[in-house]
Amino acid sequence: MTKRKHKRENAQLFQALTQQTQGTPPTDHDAPIPDQALAHLPGLTPLSSSGSLPKMKKFRFQLMHEWILHRLPPGRVADVGGGKGLLAYLLQQSGWQATVVDPVAQVLPEKYKDLNLNRRVKIGAAESVPHITQPFAPAIAEDFDLLVSMHAHGCNVELIDVAAISGKPIILLPCCIIDEPLLPAPGQHWIACLVEYALAKNLTVEPFRLNFRGQNIGLFIHAAG
Ligand SMILES: C[S@@+](CC[C@H](N)C(=O)[O-])C[C@H]1O[C@@H](n2cnc3c(N)ncnc32)[C@H](O)[C@@H]1O
Image (tube, rainbow, N blue to C red; front, top):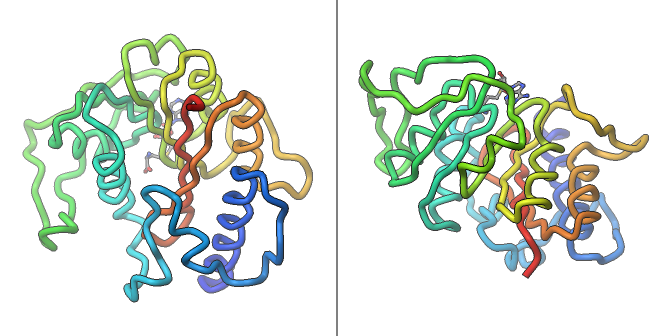
């Protein structure tokens, strides 16, 4: 898929999702998204109006970190399917008690780019984040105030179930459909399927986009009210 096509499809999907979560009927999906139509969505990073190119996919951790700091007070967060743990590390640096939940144990990257300072920052070899080395299971959620899952496998539906049962907020940035107990209807996008599933459980879904290339649509899902 070309980058332009991917960008257009992403924009169309986001437009459809914002309509899905607001209960308005779909309109012309080929039309560009007017910024004012998205401006009311809390935390939405303006992509087309900023004049800057979307950042590279490898910066998704920094962008997710910024989004969380902007929206939520610090607490105990699980980075579910957190991989190398950079998101958990950044949140830990910002006062969160962050833990990676992932069946595969990996070490932190040696460095990352601080997007605000525009320079590389080293992560010392002795630094670490707590790690629960097992697949996500609902009982794990008991020890956390927020559960984040970015491009993670096999836990998106389970996390929505946790949000519905426990009232805890979750943030999903869904990607591939792997090891999930639910499949989209024919022609339905996986993210739209997850939104439908969450809405059916009376949860509030706030779609947002992060300023990087690739699957950059996130869902902030929390109890209504
Ligand atoms: C594509 S990677 C994403 C890693 C990281 N969040 C990122 O954005 O780069 C998917 C991660 O999900 C983890 N994973 C697979 N099944 C899982 C499960 N049932 N519960 C939690 N994590 C899982 C994998 O080990 C892997 O680290």
